[in-house]
Length: 262
Image 1 (spheres, rainbow, N blue to C red):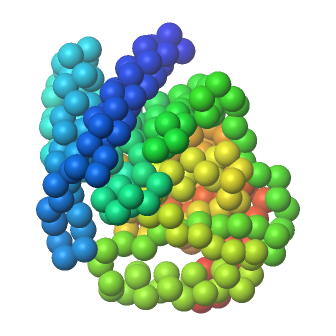
Image 2 (tube, rainbow, N blue to C red):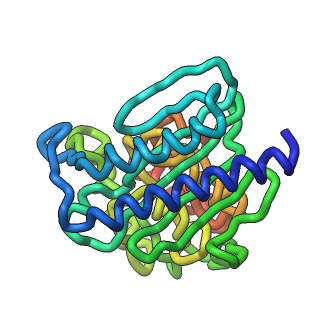
């Protein structure tokens, strides 16, 4: 892959994400909600947004595969796969809480090469490729320079399944509120990753996350200088269902805090 190819893919991802954002914005306060599970919402807007993204990308790259939150896998002949969350933070969107977005990533074989997140309703566009810096709109972004966990602001998320991981994360939430200046829970993983990438928060962790939650934001965070691992401090994969991200400087402190609870 070269930079010219990446630019074409990035341009396509931004166009598709903006188009999906327009679908979401036009349906605000009108979308009909249904349930995947008792507390796991899906709306017609999720479905319409995903359809728009896949249609636009397929028109340019008909042999590319897709992994999307609502429609699952659509396998084609290519070794390129687009990973899509058409409405990250659906529950926030339904309730009018202003933290949700669109997440689109492209993987070539096993490497994420493009990531785009549109943060709504602010319409901030975060993006990066595997050969570029990370951006928010026209500005280069970088992780924070905070050197100590005690001076940090963190963010996390909680899944819909109130099992072992959920209970353990409640313990972590309490632990990190004791060790930092605060912990936030915004309800949109892709946005959390972008806020870490841009230095708005110093670190982020979460259990029970899916590839479409992580793929785009993880690349953006990485290209902004973040360190990404699993919760044990080991190698990160978007397919491992857990993530720990920080500005790198406080990473070992976060890993140690998690280890001391587990």
